[in-house]
Length: 57
Image (cartoon, rainbow, N blue to C red; front, side, top):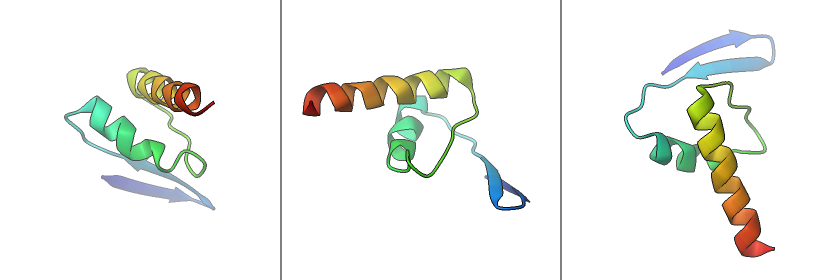
């Protein structure tokens, strides 16, 4: 993990082996973070959040 700071914003870089597991862990912080990439992680998180909304709507 690399934590680069610039003002109040932080960019944190993770090394990971399981995209689905990382997306699941990050969804817990959805209101506090912005995922910048990779595109596959952004898409996986979006699909997971849409599934949660559909199941609880």
